[in-house]
Length: 198
Image (tube, rainbow, N blue to C red; front, side, top):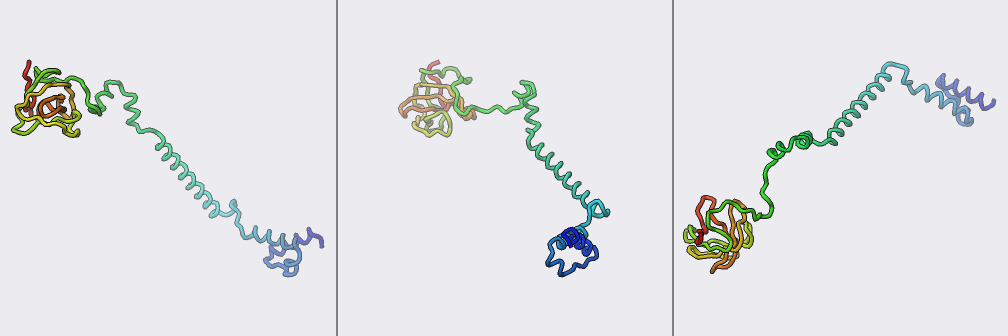
């Protein structure tokens, strides 16, 4: 027998379900035909039978749904939030009122409304401290360390100011207790630096 006949014989024995043991062990083409036919018989074809077809259709549907869901989620994450777009396209007056006004990081030298009489080069008297000292700080803010202490009734000279910070109006003053930035008055309205020359 030639190779083609051995191959055909292998296909025929596979259809019957019983191989010829001698041929299967000693003839390559017989074994090749037999194995090929057995694999095709074991594997159901996708286009045949309703169950297999429905299974593949279900798998394809699930993959599509997952893909579309992933696309929507990734696309929504890539877009900026709608509030940002609203603020950018809003008129300038709306933006100005919508954003909170923040105090500057560094104190400014913008003059604030002050009682008449306190000015650079003028003099003032420390008062209303209830017997305590008025602190003079390194910088015009509450976090700055104190470097001078002015007693109640002490006369001081005004060197710089005013600076508004931390809810106070600050003046840099010089007196017997040293030099430093002191608040002009308390938040309750008690005036600590009374002007002496109007």
